[in-house]
Length: 414
Picture 1 (cartoon, rainbow, N blue to C red):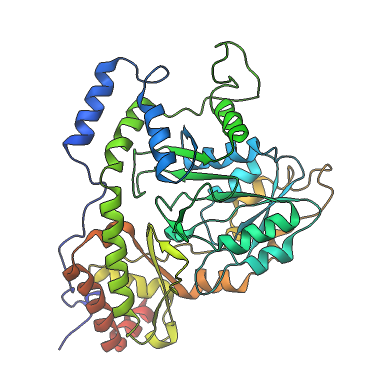
Picture 2 (picture 1 turned 90 degrees about the vertical axis):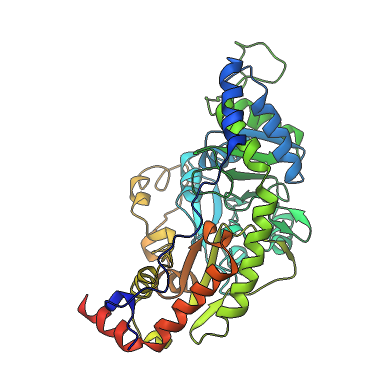
């Protein structure tokens, strides 16, 4: 009799999925070349080369390579003049950095709900939250899937708002053939170790606006201006510069990005077709306007009633036991994170703001369903596997569906 691995049976698979990060002699040669140049930071050419190459890749005119995706968001907000008492609308289903960047510039994150079919920020929710304090919308292209930029641009234009794209999971992603990041005013990308191209840490800002580029460049480089004197400082900048070593690695990583992206998309389409046939599993809705999906995450939905009413965590553990690296993803809405308490005095209760924010009273039903009941993830490296690897994912779900008694029994014992 077949038993679930979590109940002591044999797992569907024991071999690992592709190991991440992927690198070869190209990264090694690039690092040695940067080392031998003697120009490890300021003065080298690799950072500038990467900025220009990545900006072009994202259909943008300008790029500023920085220390992290969080820094890219913060600098973008500062370059747009967003600060004390300003409100920025952000999705409630995202990593903490999206809201932290807003708080770091003494502005107020206002949390919007998400679309149940895409898990991206819901334009209708955004529109309902606009006030006389709102200065910007900060959509996240969650998992590498572009948000509804048509609707968001329309809202921004109608209300004279800025758009900063959190594209930290969306390298090469396209909305109607246009790559994300510079569709709005500015965009931020991350190159942290889990990301689809990585230098361990790092980030970049992209924009098509020369004035914003100069401001961002100054803010990331101690307040200096391009072509001006070294010890003249025009803005209250700091040192957020990417190193030559990071840029060298990223230039090598970019060489395989398109091939890997196509592989992820191919495998995601295959999984969508297979998993949609399993009772209780629903891939996110496809949209013809998303002409390229980066798939940093493969996000899908489950109906827990179809899995015996167990918790989302229990289902994820069952998949993990079968050799499938499933994740529960964000386990709570961002507005319920404890770090917000740290900012209660300032800026949330700052007299300059003049309003009262009580995040404990917020309830975003779609986000809460995604966090508590519905949303599961596979990391991007899973999608670099073979068709046989994808079949193992499907087989694991089918095995769990065929052995719900095991799942329920183990779940109750824990």
